[in-house]
Length: 314
Image (cartoon, rainbow, N blue to C red):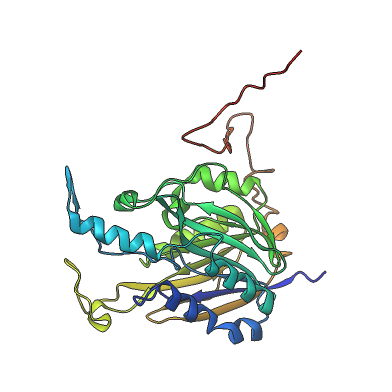
């Protein structure tokens, strides 16, 4: 089996015309995905459902406005069900292009929303998901917290892949837990377009000795979008992109793509991973389990558990 794999990123933003329009934009890139012979395609955080940057949802400490509840209802309706048509469309895209797909979505589960990364296999469709463990700042108003049951490392066409969403990448114990599962392709769906994000991605590539594929949304300035957002320069991009692909030794292989939407790709050799871990394997020869140990609880957490006692007749 060839160790040469093609890693790809689609950098686009969620359409303000709705979730279907975003899905249509993704599907419009089918020929480029196919022409690149992508083994894995990574797309940004919250792409289907949207990242409502600048939205307050009518909340201040101690009270919530009715207008904010209406805003949340619109956002809730824009989210997707994992058994819904959007996942079916992405599964069909994966099949047609023979590419494993990892993308950020806003998952609707009952009346709670989760910032989720989904894993889609070209032959099996949706095979796993990861829910963001710790929404950042005001994200906690609108997203629930994932638990330890959705921390998969998944076999893809490119190798063993994991997804950590945006500032989860700053959680050192989460990184260690995924390194221990043998991650080879570290996927980082995000909306963090700050220049320092590039340093974070290079650090993870070097620390985990894995390929890093970070996909960021791109949105032009509010002025170009016809929006007015409080406390934001209308001429400055709302989310500036910065998608990047990095080698296990920290070399930038593609990107960062800035100031535009687009498609970037890099062909890599998976054999570069054991070569890079020759002198640093943080869960192997460079670990000190006699001093440091990490315990990870992957038990699903339910708010209600019903226990039914079986009554047997004698």
